[in-house]
Image 1 (cartoon, rainbow over the protein chains, first blue to last red):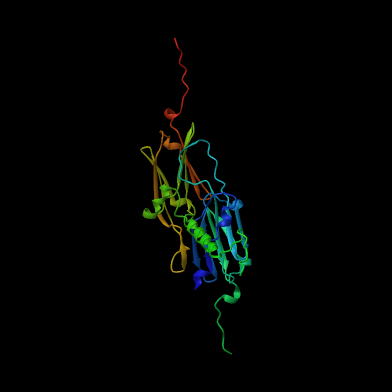
Image 2: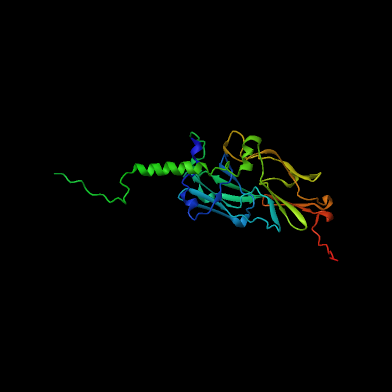
Length: 126
Length: 155
């Protein structure tokens, strides 16, 4: 049942809006006692290049690369020079006001706490 | 006589068509999954983690740029042997693993990339930096490998 709390949003029509190509960053989602933890790999993205928004339960993460500029001609190239974009549909039980994000060495970590009323509670019998 | 009401062809008269459009979008979205990169990176489906490596060259240096998100500096090992640059390491992902993992697309474990350098480099002057998950290794060219302008007088 909990699998549906953070769901990939497949309505991707918006991501092709301006014909710009995006990389879908590899992401890990795990459940913690208080909520969910999302980790997205976006090498080349610093704090300034990151835009995270929540609209109608849709969590969108956009990362703009600020790659070091290298003086020289490319001899061999494997990386893709595109920005990153991915969106997830989050369950209403997640307290969207308390979502927190940080970025460290190209990995964006988002913590999505569950709202108080859905956390397991112990009810004492009086 | 019964009349059939005229329907403007611009209107979507058959709602099922929308579902075909949805199916098409879903199929297209499969090609956006992270596993579809360029062909060189497809190898990681079989051999684990293959970080993308770029190589640049200018008059003075050879520069290698490797995408290594989420590493610790001390876990990256850069070595140079016989004109071959090797970048190896191991990444630990303490979170996102175990029984509570719902989706694991990030790779944890060892990786190794080797690349033959296009020219001889001065092994004693190699420097590296790691920022925003990108490792940049600068390898100054050996004096004899630098392009030189030679004045030749034509008799």
